Length: 114
Image (cartoon, rainbow, N blue to C red):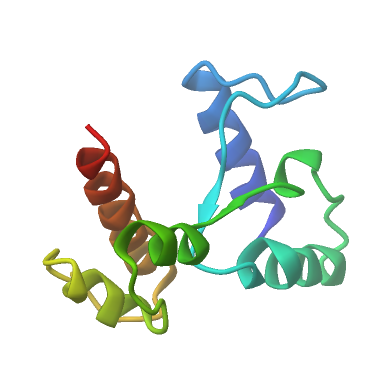
């Protein structure tokens, strides 16, 4: 992570109509576990002297919802994606690849709720 990465993310949020600066969030960050925003990002930001942002203090842990919706064990993103019939795309443990595959679960979950 870098200051540029955080700035680009916040710029993207503003460009897409999400208010960030001091306004209650109207979106949620979705992660595959609590580690990403609970420990990894804060540690990286601290080591680079990047101020913590409030909008990284809350997130949705998709692993918990996965177990509730699919009634399946949530160990291993690749295994979970494939278990619901969604093709896993890319190399596991790559940030962008994991984000896309997590989004695939979110989309499948949303379609099941219709």
